[in-house]
Amino acid sequence: MTATTRRARKERTRQRLVEAAIKLFAEAGYANTSVDRIAEEAGCTKGAFYTSFKKGKEEILLEAIRADQDERIDALTTDITRAAESAEIIGLLVAWAGEKSASGRLSWSLIEQARLPTNVLLSLGPYKEAISRKWQRLGASLSSRFPHLAHNGGELGALLYQIAYVPVPSHVSRSNSADIMQVALEGLLRVRS
Image (tube, rainbow, N blue to C red):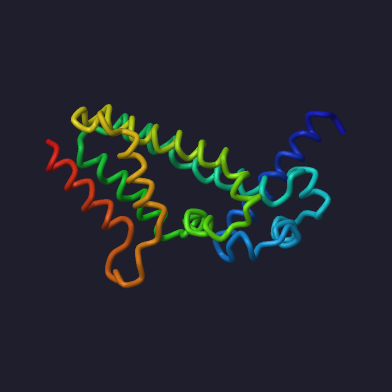
């Protein structure tokens, strides 16, 4: 087997493990998901897990969060830059929030952090930095299209993340993140224009 083939196989295994972790963390939470369960879900051995993620569950948590963020935000910011009009931009952000609301993927991470052990919380520094860069990028892409929002691009990106990723309270039974995103953006653009 060539070195290229080995690297490709290791990368496929790593990707399967990350996909399994994303699914299981969303379903059961970080604390209730074991390395054994992630490996089983991915169709791998525990040894293959530790070959890919030497630091264990904390390392795959960071990789799962990064993968989820990178997957959509890069495309979203590109689409915002290319959108012809503000209604299209609002539609893109509403669809993104609706997708997050419907999938439930990784919204747990924002809530469950308070219950994580201290050693895991300390390891989330790179995650917080990665998320901050993503929401700053999202805010900057909107600010470039709506110059009156330029002075608070980072806060705007953080607000949009909060709307998209945090589940709507159960007492708001008729709304979801997409509805709340629509109201927030229409209000921001109307008030600021």
